[in-house]
Image (cartoon, rainbow over all chains, first blue to last red; front, side):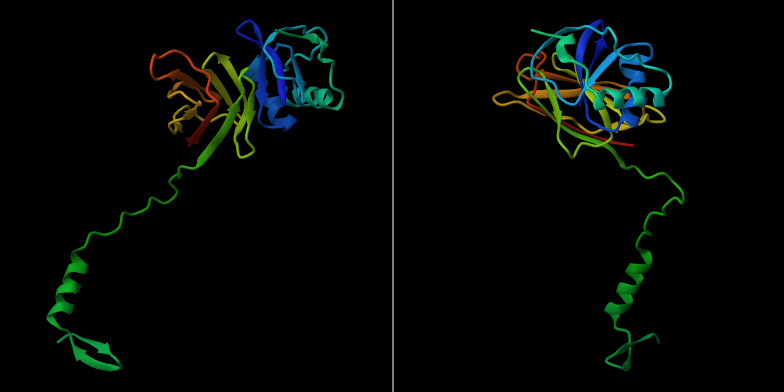
Length: 87
Length: 139
């Protein structure tokens, strides 16, 4: 799966190796970090990401279960990828 | 006199038998195994394939990694599925490949929840984006 979040002030594509929302729900507390928004999709097109609009994106909670639920919700109903800006 | 049984018949030990028995007695004992001591295990392994645009795809045999990302050109962060108790785990020498180039990869940072690999070209030391990275962690 692919996660888009801000790292070092820039939107980045992060490849998730584990597909388990419970695992990811715990580890998103490290990246992007608690209080930070993120998007997640099963796949993304190849390309260089230039930016992303995080309006309406879930925000990482300190509670891993809350994050896991947010991730599962994005997998069940993927958000539009129009929020991504590609080079 | 010491004896041994050969084909069901008791015979005296030869000089060779006696010398062998003495050598066996003098041989060092195998090292004692500490009961309850932790044994190092393969905790994380990964083979990542990287496309020309920097997209990373994990091969199915990858385990113990939650996510990976290119933090900068030639700099990769791998986040573990579970945090280690401390950062004293051992990262085996990462292996990076790129067609037509010789690359060097080294671990430049390691913490309980992630570690960083930096990949450079051997000929000029410049950051490089490999076609693939493999690594393993023993803890």
